[in-house]
Length: 486
Image (cartoon, rainbow, N blue to C red; front, side, top):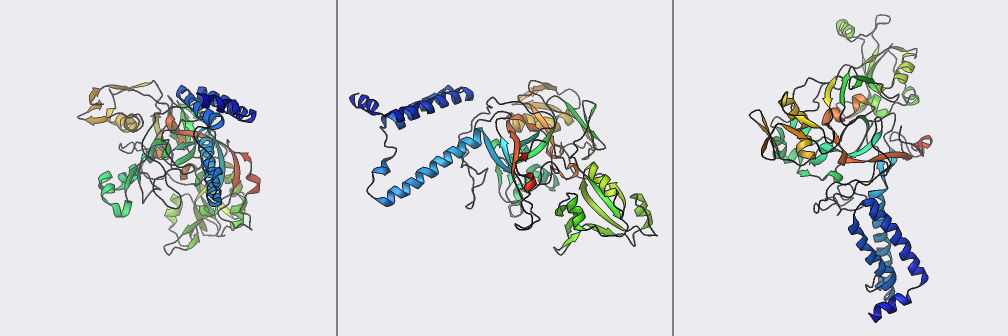
């Protein structure tokens, strides 16, 4: 006891000041987090700054200069990693835009500062993980986290809630199961295209690699625009979004794929660049792996086929046809005004599989729904359209809310018991990209549960154009420190 009193009495004013400041901040954080057990760490702070029973800085007294120098670096690195982990978890996180799904709002190569405070930071669900690594260790590979312990979902109080048209960063819901050799496609879509389903994917390790499961907060980060909110019914008719039967105008930045018919002229790359069309949008790759313009010469095209597409003739020729060029309404108007452009035509409906994958709805990317979005506390009844409801909401009930789910002989079983209804525990959101025809979004893989929401992009702090060199305009200076919320 005398030793404790001596240590306390010998503590300097500076030590007490640091301890007091840190303790006050930690008390405030504890009440924000809603976990009173965190207050126990104050005893640790007391020992670090006041009593020092544990020799935290033992290396400073070492007579070996190599040990002192090495431990200085170790101390600095450990402190930096803890600080980064804390900041990334509760305040801000860096995110890079990898795809064109949100052009023209956010571009490939934009680096975003994502606010965790906008919707409230999510308490760690997989607490033992390496800072700055989402799921794979840099350089050496392998998992960047330890599966256990897994903590229950808990979100701290934030500044607001997800609203319609918010751009949101979230963990990819269908990324719970991943084929390591084909990570660009989700496991469920791969299974749909495989003749033997999920069993065929799991059996073919040569093509798909190992199949792994990832916790919620270790799944890939995605960014999309929130279109549908919990409890609403969403539907698309000819690219127009309806919420509960009311038209929702699409954003000015929304793009759709168009065909551009010219009088035979080849569109200059400078024209595309001036209009903000990325090189990857008008340049394709041929069978020999060579880059080629994405147009067809229609000199000898079948007249009936051309007329079915609505193409025009000039001097007896259908000219050239560029396909799958994403443009906004304003860009279409600008392109039509070019003297060498005969017409700009909306691309036909794309084929493919759409959510729910295991039910033949006949929906497409621009004619989709109606689909009800689950809401916390809302109850769905399995009385009518049971096969459809099972296909649409099984993943929510089973994968996201952790129930055992089975459907056999026309009857639903939840946690082993027959069930004629289910009450949802989470709110869900329907996310879409602005680049509507080139976005893998909720139309393809379904709803985003509230526990998958990461945060909201605040600003673009760096933007790099992948099509340009460092001395040829690679840095998009005009985009630096612009808002990323629109």
